[in-house]
Image (cartoon, rainbow, N blue to C red; front, side, top):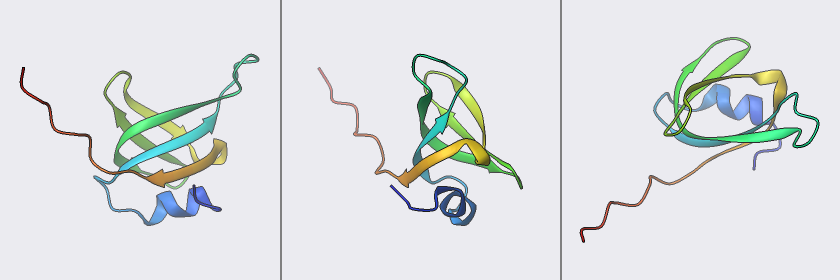
Amino acid sequence: MSSDPARLLGTLPIGTRVVVRYRIEDAVHGATDALGELVARQVDTCTVRTRSAGDVVIPLADVTAAKTVPPPPAHRGR
């Protein structure tokens, strides 16, 4: 993952598939990941569209790691 993840997220084109690890206020886990398409970016947040949670708005100050990932595999027929 990137050594400066907030900077990486600021340079990626919208539509790039990413995984972002960020801090949450959960005493048990402390962090979680968002895997999906980067759909928006503001000065202090980015938005990742995930399959399970929809659009996740992530404060850049809470991002601990980020990287690009390849597209999902194609669905296989039965």
